[in-house]
Structures are given as C-alpha cells and as structure tokens.
Image 1: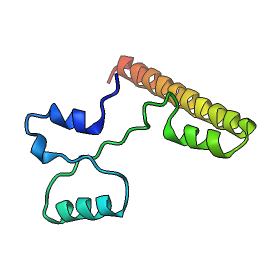
Image 2: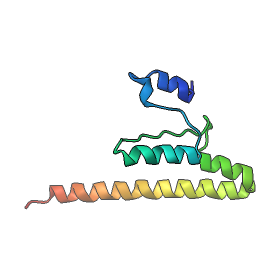
Image 3: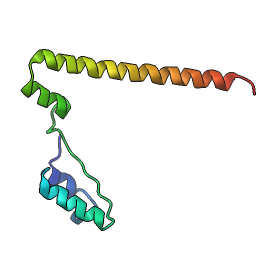
Length: 101
C-alpha cells in the first residue's frame, strides 16, 4: 500500500517537524528559509505509485513508443555496464589481495 504524505507524516514520533507540500516556488522558499537557519532538510518525492520512474512516465506521455523503448534500452545498457565494471573491479581487487607483499 502506498501512503499519502499526510499519513506518512502522522507516523513520525514528532509529526510537527514535517509538512506535505507540492513542488512549487513556495516549497523552494520554505526549504531555502530552513537551510538559511541551518536546519537539516529532508525531502521525499514520489512518482505517484507508478511502476516506471517519473522520467519514463513523462516520456510515455510525450514521445512516441519507439523513443520510450530506446530510453529503456539505454537504461538497461547503463545498468549492465555498471554491473560489469563493478564485477571487474572486485575481481581486480581480489587478485591484488592474493598477491604477496
């Protein structure tokens, strides 16, 4: 189940420290005011419970499906390259750890 912002805030030990807000210039001013006072600001944003990230949802509404498929392909390729790089890095570190001296 997806919690609405107000419900999520109600579960905090001190709900008075949080405020649900829309992303707009008022929110930016509020955040800037807190930062100027030295307060810690934690912001959470949701994609409305959609399965796809908000960027992909936006793309599906505004570009042809072939463009969306290319975006998906690009995301998958980047993920695969990241996994390969991580694996190779760990293998290299493991081989260095096995060497004496």
